[in-house]
Image: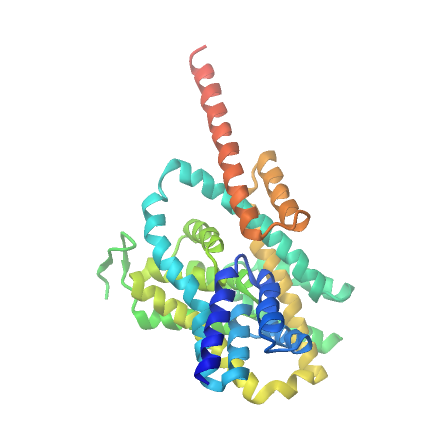
Length: 176
Length: 203
């Protein structure tokens, strides 16, 4: 029990450290650590875990940590793995943010930040492409996703995004 | 509770820890999909609903959050919690973001695994997942509206997409290289602008 908890901490600290730039990037990392190295889940189990992770609240890395931790060492495993996956980013943030505060009004830093924003934009465009190519199975899905996008733009700041998400769920239940 | 908040340097009242936790708990509980979709909901809650943060500040902090390892939603929560109430606030925000997903996965692992095979449940959840695609595209729209002003920014954006999709570079390197390339482009632009202004005023 104690032993498997230590294994969980080690693996999920690694996942937390390597998880840069959004959930879709984390998936190969989780696959490597959980399926290939540790053999905690089979590839099929990982696929259904990822489906559940997409459909439930929260970042994928955290969902995966809770799920695998629970599988390996029940409640204490879930707790330990979830804490382990958050630990690296929280401690790095604690180290880095005071430094950022000091330099963020510098003219040169501001220019680099403008560039970062465009870099993040290209990352988001790539993410919506790769996510869309997995999730959107036919023309109706594409239309529904486009309708959700238009509704989000139209009601920006007025309607909570979750309302649109649930509406899409209901629509697909009614029409498909 | 209407004393000025020293961290915000405005007359905004100090926000209680419980309210920070509860707001981020709501965000964590109501967001399907990962970090980038979550960013839309965090922005909705903090910028429009609670009016705790300016949109401009939120977007810069979101791009910083992308550069630090870990789930983007957790990093954004950390930065915003810190902005509101310092280190303790950031821990509250992170706890609030993580707790709902922890709870829900536990409940699913305990009770709900069979229901995910039910076709009606699966259809409903698939519809939600489709909406998440729209949500990710929407966060791209917000960034594009703010950052793409001229040809060089379009080119820089296209270059970043090329780096992640065709060179298969790890995304963080794409963001970092766009950052530094952007620095040179914007510096050159400012120099050019200063030069032409000089020529304009002293003919």
